[in-house]
Length: 330
Image 1 (cartoon, helix red, strand yellow):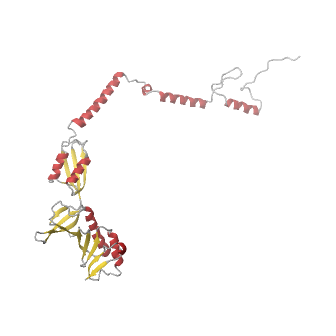
Image 2: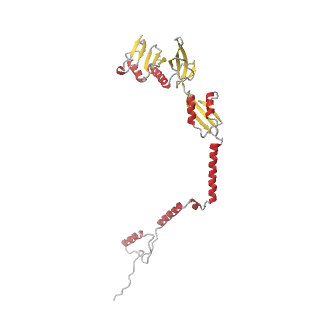
């Protein structure tokens, strides 16, 4: 008679008997979770140490990020401290507002005017303008664009104006003039019909900056007016002046012939260059100067301007006869 006893159950921790069974138990052990409930047949399995450490770090970091600053430091601001801080901030803001807008701490008391690096004090017009627009004005609230625009409008001889604020009460004004650009010979209509010749120096803006004076290193431009021009008057507008000066320089560079003077004919919109070889070259002021210069260069094989005695060369022709050069020999 056989005796039937209770069959002994196996667990994961029983000693392995075969290699394949050992691998199977290891796979089961690796899938065990931390929350697995212990039973008589399946005891609770702890997580690997590295997994415990990782979860502990995550938990600690999350808690710290969630905590407000006063809990991290262990200090808590009281209601009285908050009131004191707010009052201090209000006091600082109010003090700054008063200092900037209501006190005289930033009111301009003096200024210096420099012209191309040299301080000037004898320009009464500039000093009067500075007194009007700067003195007793708030240096922080000063509109620099308004001041510079006014100076340039009332003083057209200056090309640029810049303002520098020197806190708390001073301003520095730096001025740059237009350079001297040309000599102007003005044929003024006289009472008896005889022309009266006047000489001036003009800057690159076309404004007269000197009377009865000349600079032989600069181009000479002849104009005609009914009345004599005065200081700070404009003999030519800037566009026409630039065109004539560039035309003189380009002609001398391309042909190696000096230009004694350029005759500006306002009504005809022409410029006649009087050369050292005693002939004139006529240009149309309304047309491109380069195309007219190139036309004369192409005509040089047939027209020897260096040896042929000429009275004038006319380059104004355009249209179907654009390549035609008209000249008059002596």
